Length: 199
Length: 199
DNA sequence: CGAATAACCGAACAGTGTTAGGTTAACTCA
DNA sequence: TGAGTTAACCTAACACTGTTCGGTTATTCG
Image (tube, rainbow over all chains, first blue to last red; front, top):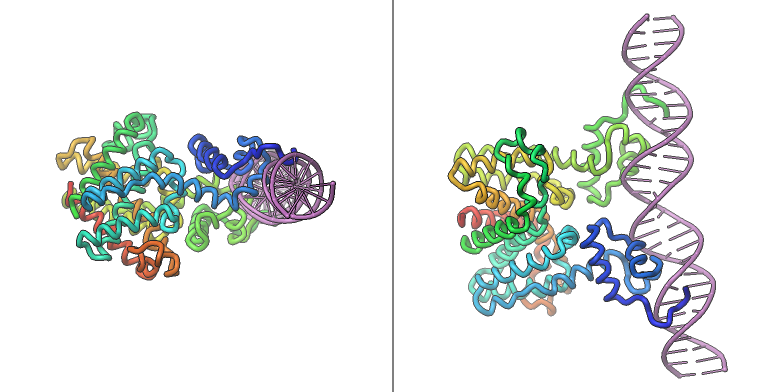
C-alpha cells in the first residue's frame, strides 16, 4: 500500500488504540506490531507519527493524568489533598494496567509536575515549610500509587485451597477477588483519611 | 563444554548473580543470556536449574522478602505495624530495581502470605474486625510499596532549568536528588506515623 | 506542470525467552 | 571393573521484540 488518500494514522488514534490494547491485554500485551495490525497498518508506519514506544507510553500516561483535579486547594489544603488523591486514584484505577509504567518516573512528566506545583505551592501558602510540603506530597503519592498498583485485594487467588490450612488467619482470603474493587476503594479511603487526619 | 567436574551452576548461585545484575543494571538489564554469561555458561544451561525467568524473579523476590520482620506484634499491634512497615521498606529499598516486579503480585508469594497471615491475625486478636484488619494491612502496603517505588525524590532531574520558570513553586526541585535518600525515608516515616496515629 | 513532501510498506538487524536434541563426564550398581 | 543411567552442559533454532533503512506512490505547493 502506497500513500493512502486519507491518512490512516494520527497521534491521537495511535494513542487511543494503544490504551485500548493495554486495558485489554496488559502492559506486556502491547507491541508495536500488534498496535499496527489493529490500526490496519505495518509496524514501521507508526514511526512516522511516534518517536519511540517509550514516548508513546509517556503520551498515553500524560493523557490519563490530565484528569487529576487540584481545584480543591481553593477551599483549603485538606480538601485539596483529599480531592487530588481521589481524582488521581480514579484516573489510575480506570486504567490499572498502565500503572506500573506510570509509577516508574512520575516526576518528569509535565502533566504531573504542573499539578505537583499547585499542591506544593498551596501547602506552603497554608503555612507548611517547603520540606514539609514536599514530604506531604510524597506521602500522598505513596498512598495513591500504592493503592493503584491494586495488586492487593485483586491479587489474591479465588481458590480456597491456596490459603486454608497454610495461613490460618487468611481462611477467607479467597473471597477477596469478589469484593476487590469495593475493598480496595475502602482501604484507600481509610489510608487517605488516616493520613490527612494525622498531619 | 560437556559435563564439568564440579557443577558451575546452582539455584543459589543463579539467584544471587541475577540479583546482582538487577541491582547494577536494572530490571530490564537482566536477560537470560547476560546472566548465563556472567555465570560462565550458555543461556540454555540455566533451564536445567530454573523453570522460567519469571519463576527466577519470583525466587529472588521471595529471598528479599524473607527479612521482613513481624515480631513487633508480640508487643502490641501499633508496634507491630511500625516494625513490619519499616523492615519491609528496608528490604525493598536495598534492592530498589526489583520493586516494580515485586509490586505486580505480592499476594501470591508464600513469603508475603506468611507475614500477612501474622499481621491479619494479630489485628483481629487486638479487636479489629476481619474487614478492618484487611483494610489496615492494605493501607500499610500502600505506604510501603508507594514509598519503595522510590521514584519520588530520586525521580527528579538535577538540572535547575527543568523546573525554574515553568513551575514557580518547584524552583528548588533540582536539589531533591541530592537529598533523595534522606527525604524519602523521612516522607515514609511521616506517612507511616500519620497513618498509624489516625487509625 | 514539476518538485517536494508525506504516508505507507518490505526487509532487515540485533536482541529477547525458551525448547529440542546432542555430547560427554560423573555416578550407580552388578 | 565395566555397563548403563543420569546430570550438566552445549549448539541451533523458533517466534517474538523495538527500531531503522530504502523504496514506492499519492498528495500538495510553487
